Length: 93
Image (cartoon, rainbow, N blue to C red; front, side, top):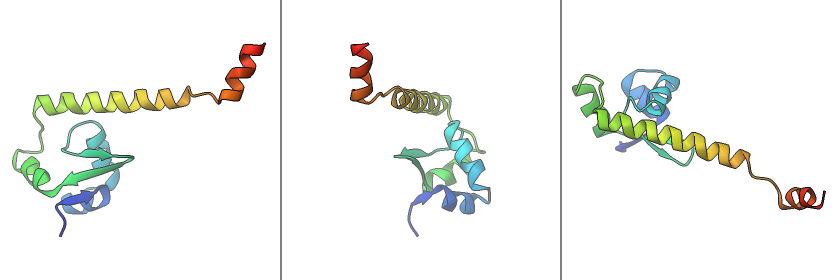
């Protein structure tokens, strides 16, 4: 068995729904890493997380919040991208 789990595998491992696992990961409440658009989980870190009572150190929560903010800012930046032809046409007006 791999030490790196998908959200679905982590959910099965923890006996939670995949949506709950992803929500906790997004909120920084569970050890996870975003790889592209997918979440990945370390089996070892999940076991440690359970042994610690399902809590995360304040520093890790801060890192999770920063990651969520950066992800949202990146999406907003992508939404602002305008095709060159459209920008050029706006300059000619």
